[in-house]
Length: 444
Image (cartoon, rainbow, N blue to C red):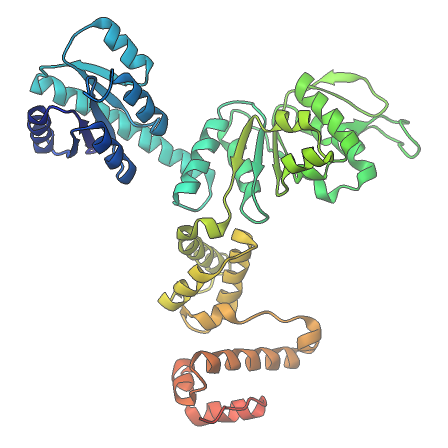
């Protein structure tokens, strides 16, 4: 059975001590708070599965204000309200303000333990379900910001409400869109994905809504648009900020009226779920007049912001290991590990290209890494352009060898012996190789 972490908030010290002992002896972890301030301080610094709160704190006119505040801050934490009176209106109000259950003093030991056991089982079921849902999302990261993203994705998937996903380039907006679709009732059909930045301005309307034969010069056959293909499923408009202002008005009609009109055709109803994404500040574009305000508020009923990688550095190493293992498995090469120094170096990077940049850096390190354990050198060896390395195989190999050996020497402060040991080469052979590549060892 899952063991709850319980907070008992009650100004009655004797009740707190006796109840804490009872619950602790049953195998639960317990913390007590004898005042409103104590409860607020403990809740801010620790996490709990359940809170037992007295309804009558001396500092409060009633316990409902505290109950409401705690429920707003921790909506997923069950709250068991305790009262010295058995007034039915109190119980009704407690449930109204966010309590999961209501119990009267004096509390029978067996009765309390049964309540806790039920809550424990319910929490375990909910947590197991969430783990399944998070696994289905398919995104890597256990940081607090990403947990909020997962919660919003799971909630958004339950409805057909438009969703706007914001975030910098490379954070994984398309993965979030795919997860929403995968968890939704529309997942029986593939999601239709469009990158608005890749469509020429003059073709937007025809590509999105389609056209009938003869609608314009060159329209020799009827053409279905992306929205028609998205009937009964989700449609993902990536980089929606690139939509021309005149097309935005027609998209607004699709969302508002659930209908589309092909060029040269009639209006017909359509059922689809719109998911949009942008790395631009759409509200600023609204102020500047390049994006319609009414459209913005329609597409952003649910707004999911995916934080930049530099704002969730605790996810860098799990992501790195995921990319290393995935690349090795796909290419059927022996598994590689990450050295402590390389991990420290990765955590110091800002990664302006976010997860996409990290993936590229990791895969390049795996390709060029000689040893089973990836070092800082493997991550700092930069790819060169054709103009830098020449076009022949020999020139390419020579350029890479030179750059790699220079990096190794730099890491070891120009020490030939340490560099040879690291490379598992004979010192004299390394010296000859450096000389043939025109690499000068600095004299100390």
